[in-house]
Amino acid sequence: MIIDTDDLLNSIKESFKNIKHVKSEEIPDIDLYMDQVTTFLDEKLKSSARNPKAEEKLVTKTMINNYAKTDVIPAPIRKKYSRDHIFLIIFVYYYKNFLQINDVKTLLDPIRENFLDAGGEFGIEDVYKEVFDNLEASFSKIEADVTKDYEEAMKSFEDAPKDMQEYLKLFNLISKISTDIYVKKLLVEKMIDSIKEHRTDSMKESEE
Image 1 (cartoon, one colour):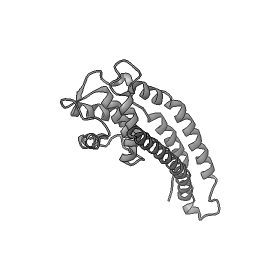
Image 2 (cartoon, rainbow, N blue to C red):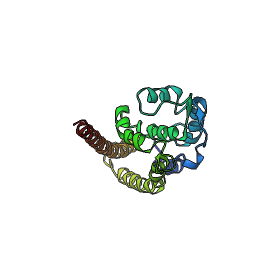
Image 3 (cartoon, rainbow, N blue to C red):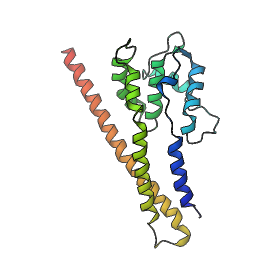
């Protein structure tokens, strides 16, 4: 098995350059029909996808309908989706990649309840900007961490069979990154459980 490890590192760094988020000012200031929403999001999110050239949409009608049915996002108004809808859908798009949909709902419920249709006050767009405006610094840190993992992995398995060394180095790199993902996912789930517990306690207190 022959793996060009130098090319792999270049590919990893290039992937970071391709990761883009949808800027708030890019989101249309008019309500959109479903087809317009899926087309808009597909165009904006495609460059960061695993396979940018794939024909299937990243956000489908079925997905959005299911989000509305399970109350993750509000139902459309006269079959149209507002900017607030789209902010929420983008949040769901990212979180659903590593969280169960009920956890996504728990995480976003306070956003829905407090910051939708803010009417000029602090709203979901402000939340969205605060989160995504700081992404570049986060990406730089993650890239540095991945590069460090790569350098460590490339020094491993020197005593393994020659024809398997490159594969094992790659396996080690994947394991290092996967461990990081696993631990952080556990932490995120615990924080979401804390949100859920706090909201449950608050509801009990209000009922009393």
